Length: 97
Image (cartoon, rainbow, N blue to C red; front, side):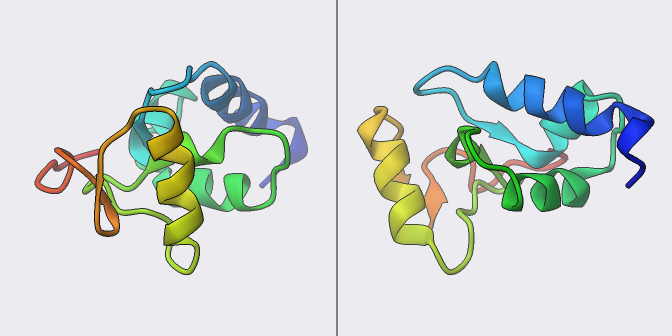
């Protein structure tokens, strides 16, 4: 990813703007940052970014980050977000995000 593209900055701003209890999908963040369809790029950016509330972002189906589901679920639950197993409750059947 080109550092001058501005995409990283727009993703960081969108994620930083999520408040406690908010949940967005990688696709929603990508679209907000001006690159619809770049959900995977958002995930890659969050994986390497410190200081952002990464736990407020999930897959289109509400899936938590593989390998750290317990931490992800605990952070969301602390903010009042319902989690069932390894998914955010209510997002399991959602499509397109």
